[in-house]
Image (tube, rainbow, N blue to C red; front, side, top):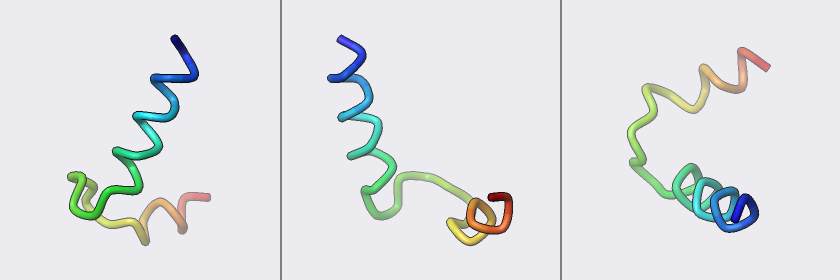
Length: 30
C-alpha cells in the first residue's frame, strides 16, 4: 500500500507541471 503510494507520489512529483512553485527552491532548501 505504502509502496504504491510512494510510486504514485514519485511519478506525480516527477511529472512536469505538477504544481510546484519552483524546483530550484527545493534544491536550495536541501
